[in-house]
Image (cartoon, rainbow, N blue to C red; front, side):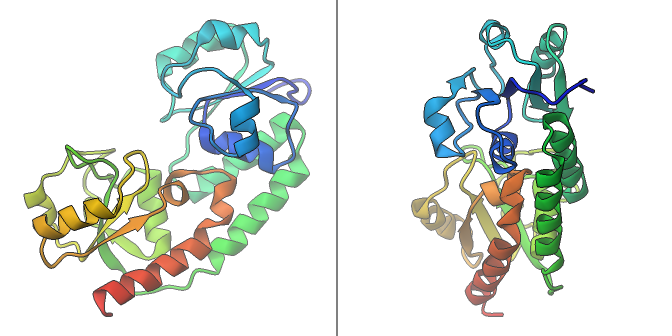
Length: 253
């Protein structure tokens, strides 16, 4: 724990960069990754310190941060460990909504923004509590193409799908497994969800899958609203409710 609120912060995680902005920080954030696209103004004005998995150690150290914010899954353990020798590092480990809310509280404490973090957390809770139970739709959620990759039951995305009212058919897998067309065809899924990230699925990919998986429709989904675990969670419940309606229309339920 820091002795005083951090005033020179480097963020190695896009969703947590957006969180820092949402709780009222600006000048305090001195470095971000090339994938930290929100807020847009920061993407164009803040020092970029590489990607989430190929950080520029010397550049980070030259910025003389008093806090680096990292994540267990998004960043490379060896890189973070090496950085830890010289700079205080906070490493989040977010597997579900409760973990995300705990992370928000931690960041609030570390940055002296406890009140703003608590307000944000409360609003996120209210949003998720507003989601009404519904009969689950069985889905396959794809994050990559050539080869097709999905998500396992031990991921944050899996937990968000459950909140959204979807039953993820590869819940017995771990992390981000490769799946074949035959596996998708025989999975029992009613609907394929095509994420906007990390692979940018588009309508042409829906058409491609329509030919490969006749009778199983697909929808494009906003990957940030399923995988970003910071302040973007404020917008997730309303999006999930609209997506459920879209799914029911597509499936004629």
